[in-house]
Amino acid sequence: MSDVILQMKELSTHFFTDDGEIPAVDRVSFTVHKGEVVGVVGESGCGKSVTSLSIMQLVPSPPGKIVHGNIYFKGKDLLKYSEKQMRTVRGKDIAMIFQEPMTSLNPLFTIGNQMVEAIWMHERKKKRQQARREAVEMLELVGLPRAADLFNAYPHQLSGGMRQRVMIAMAMSSQPDLLIADEPTTALDVTIQAQVLQIMEKLHIEKNTSILLITHDLGVVAQLCDRVVVMYAGQVVEQGTIREILKDPQHPYTRGLIRSFPKLTENEQKLYSIPGTVPKITAGIVGCRFAPRCEFAFERCLQADPPLFTLEGRRLSRCFLHDVERGEDGDGQATVRSSSVKKIL
Image (cartoon, rainbow, N blue to C red; front, side, top):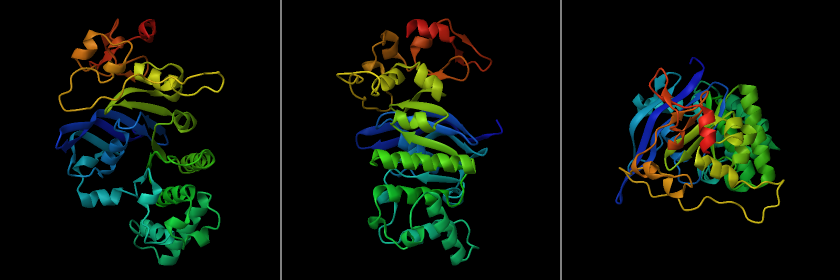
């Protein structure tokens, strides 16, 4: 599609450790369209952050390495880019808000120095006064009070919420086509979290910026996202629109995630939690990775890794429970009617 800005095909990123090869990201595929907000959700350790670092080619090597797949940005495969070419893409075309702003900002330089450097990195022709003016304007745009004074402040002089706004301002300073936000509201209180989300939503609407939002908070996803990619143990287990995922989840893991979310309208004595723990992922693992924790698991789940089944529309779900009354589409991919799935789930 012409409006596809990011397309990932069968991306696999492995870590080679003393304990063996770990497939942190295993055959992950999804797309982000122009002006779309896509959420990537899942519990800690499922591969969300490694996926985002793979897009930016910032996976620490060694021990990490992208071993397979393609990452197309505006039709060009980023995995074929040299480091010099990637430097022209990072920040200018694809920007990233990292999880912890205190470790992302350099404590030895003022906010202004770091903002101006981000602008100069891709627009060398600008004079210092012009770059400073643009930096102050971006700080004002993200709602920071006394932006001109904060320009000369150091990161430790700002609160967590203010530092995160600086990171957003820095990421948006070059007006990128794609913004990757890796848990941008982690460790922030509820009030500041709401403000940060409002800023991101405002920038998305005004600049028509595509956003890849990585989070474990379904509330954040419901507020901001158009589509959702659910990951578990390095794999995509379900994809769909925000309404489809929240109203009618098809994968048992997605159902468990939504059930564990507190409901203000119900008087629950004990919150639901998915039984068991995330398995240790190693190369050559056999069977469905969620099977040990799944109440619907049967013998086939322990013997083979299920493919992503295409449901009605463009929904995807990685579960053998969908292998009922199935056929094949024109591309040879498994398809199944939702009515058949609902009988099982």
